[in-house]
Amino acid sequence: MSYLEHFKLKEQPFRLTPDPEFVYWSKQHARAKAYMESTIWLADGFVVITGEIGSGKTTLLQSFLGELDDNVVYAMVSQTQLTPSQFLQAVLTEFGFKPFKQRKVELLDTLNMFLIDQYAKGKKVVLIVDEAQNLSKKVLEEIRMISGIETHKEKVLRIILAGQPELKDTLDSPEMKQLMQRVRLRFHVGPLDRREMREYIEHRLSIAGRKARDLIKDDAFDTIYRYTGGVPRLINTLCDTTLLCAFAEDASVITSREIKAAVEELNWKEHELSAGTHPEQTSSREGRKAEHLLRIEVRNQGETVAEHFFGPGRIIIGRSPDNEIYIQSKFVSRHHAQLTSDEYGCAIEDLNSTNGVFIGEERIKKHRLKDGDVVSLGIHELVYSDLRVAQSPSALKERQG
Image (cartoon, rainbow, N blue to C red; front, side, top):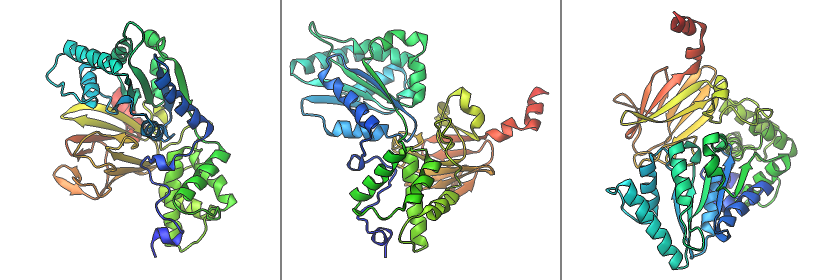
């Protein structure tokens, strides 16, 4: 008997990949989507949506895009560690151009002519930028400039920026004042409350084929909330692991006991409700670095393109935007590898990727990392730093000496 048959399911209910079919509309998710939709009927629509990692932003965007009418043309840009010219090239590529030999002034002219042409055809044009917290201030200034492109009647480009809370901090800085004057609506997506979390879980089980609400007992929901804080991705991770553990033990229902067994398997601690974050979540903000155990520097051809800080927990790496470490590359699988961090250190594991995980010339399946290890994924490198080593008294003395 398979995992699905055992629990009377037709498909996996708690996959990490975003799937609009499984979307649960909490009040705040419905409001965020309504704000996105407002860009279509507002000629000068410019919306900013922020939320913690795993709060459902990418699923929201996919649901929004799936419902657009034929008279709407859109560009979706998810790779955001770009120069202004590269960003304009990425936008034009999404609109069907091949602009890689054009200078910046030519890129702007091409975009301007395209937008005016679409307006003349009765089309509405939307630019969606996911992972917008990684945009440089120069690129944000470029976005401000192109948001002003207009005919003699109205502006012709609608814009949605979606990103982690760092985006909010950047936009609130004094030098972004002119950009913020263009923004019509802002909304922050927070975690689900206890009632919404239960509805979310039961909704996903129902879509997956389990109509009766009898799989998870009442006491289990409180335990799930204690360890996830209502963050959808953490809920998916914990529930999926719980079902696998329960299946292995031949349990037919999920109680608090099964949830705690999965928590031990994941090596999680209780969610930090007072801080509104979970140790598993990424943050680049300086104020949180003291909570982190490791740093991952992402390099491409020797150049640093991203830097991530993590506490204990599981960190997924891949080319799908829902990953904690997102690498847009044809050599990286959608869910390529995972890092597992705990108080004793960090291990990396290949998730059956196509092109493998390498340390030096050796292809590895699972490997415990040492401070300074360089992991190769296709043309990208991940440099692992153990922050406990950097924070140890001996290391501090060595730096001071």
